[in-house]
Length: 551
Image 1: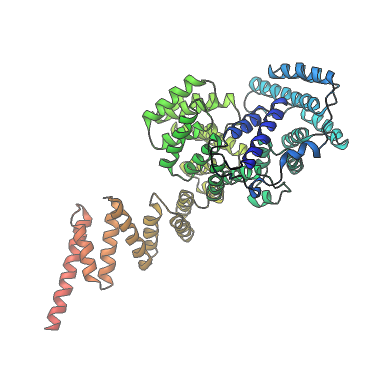
Image 2 (image 1 turned 90 degrees about the vertical axis):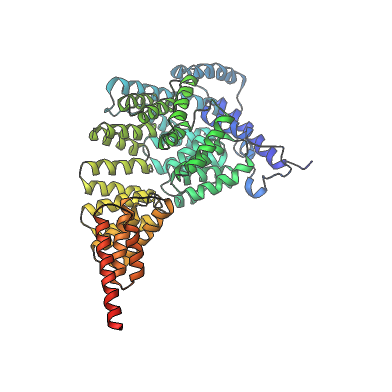
């Protein structure tokens, strides 16, 4: 049997980390680490966890950063305080630990105060209404306390993480980034810290410059960040390298499915989401993306089943409300869809998908101001969400405000430069503003980025025809004709292409080619058929004249 030392090391690290995170009430990160530990497969004959992948051995953090040992009394206090914390009695937890000195108790005390402030903020928002700006009133006091603890060098990795959270909430983002990096250098398994750090990185280069340890958790961080930055190719590469290392990881599978969904490879994404459900049928995370996919594919039966199943699993989860909202939207019951998206937002005010989808419903209900407000909220939560920027552009286009549309479409194209839909939308705005050269450039970008809808080819052909560049117009009409033929489409675009090419070839002296296009036009009814007959008569007349001259 071959040694699996690398895999054993990673599992040992993750199990130790899970315990440390659970002790401090960091439930999300604890769950993530525990799930990842179970994702390792020890049945493989080869240990894929090479030294290059592992980076520095990370259990060093316990010896490199001296943690004060809890005395017996503080440990007793911790056990009671943790039971208060688990029951969400945050102020009671904070009060009980007010004089504690050990890092674990100090963290739980500060974290409890932070969560008490968050709880009160939510209550005030419910009382005062959506438009009111409410802040966590404990943030400034926590910042001052952390400043003193940091100066005294008594902050452990968890305290440094919470200091970063407080600074981020206070909009001190550069300083927050510094403390997240410091925390992760000492304890790299806190997935919440990685997610917060990713949200503070505007681009990949700024993340690559961070002074992070060489540790295998960085691979997960960079894969997540590149997916957020819409660099799906690089993100998929990393996840495909991680997949053999963690073959049973639901997280990795869900991320790969999301990458395929974002690149509009819907069949492959659907297959992966179904694998995920088979593995863990009661896991609701990422199923909102699966419901979006089923909505786009108009898979009503599957979406109906998913909505009923999610509702029976956990009715009051934001993901469930989002799935049910999509179900009602597909049934064209837009008012009921809005009710469920609003319910999702009551459960999680920062639930990005719900804001965007609710905006779509308001557009369907002919309520552009409400749609714009919803999309703006989505953009405030995540400025990297191209869907919200794109939807704002579409909404302003409906309102016949092309300059506003152009601004938002530009934002979307910066985020998704390889998405042909964004370029087509921007080109449409330039067209309506009469800026034809700019429109042509945008359609050419769309065509260069695999325009699956085929909008750009036909538009380019028409625009070049309108500016009397017949050679380029003929090139694009011919390409569009091949596309229509290969897809077996009988449409107006095909007829337009045949008619232009027939005229162009006749004028260029390529009479046999012109005859071919005209012959095809005779199969269609309408004025184009009559025009084709006229061109054929002209060709026949020219040919007769040429024969007479020769004789």
